[in-house]
Image (cartoon, rainbow, N blue to C red; front, side, top):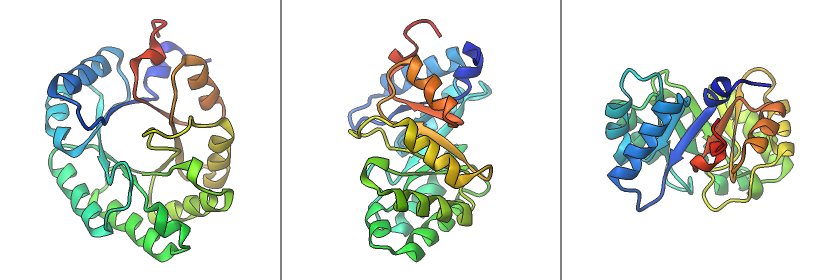
Length: 218
């Protein structure tokens, strides 16, 4: 059983709503600093604000790239990554091109992954899936491509109107990645019991978009 402090250091707290205001981002950062979460995840136009608020706090700033659909051209995602890095992002979470993956176009998906890893300039990169939209084989293929590209984490979901993450998906991704990359569990996580179950299943990071997860004081 992890201590409350250890649990907090696994958490990546996101604010990605289209209508998120400056006070919303400020609240996100203030809470993350107070609880010493691992990171906050924000859209590109909020990176500079989050970086300024969390400077020297130990809380990382993660840029959301190609969010939430992942269907933009690969070159635009690469450029988005470069801008995010310039503005202070310390990690990159990018949504893979689900349609091209389902086409079986592994060359495209792999090239996109490699381009983003290169553009991140040694910053950790996480490839975001939507597990509920993918077959078992597609999930395993994505993990294989991620390992080939240098991506450090695979993320179960954008948490953008998606079904809740499942323990089975976390176990599948962990098995496919082995000890070469980590899994970030995200999607509909609303309570501490779920957090503990996902960590037990092998997840290394937990993505949340509501502070209610730790409403019991953890």
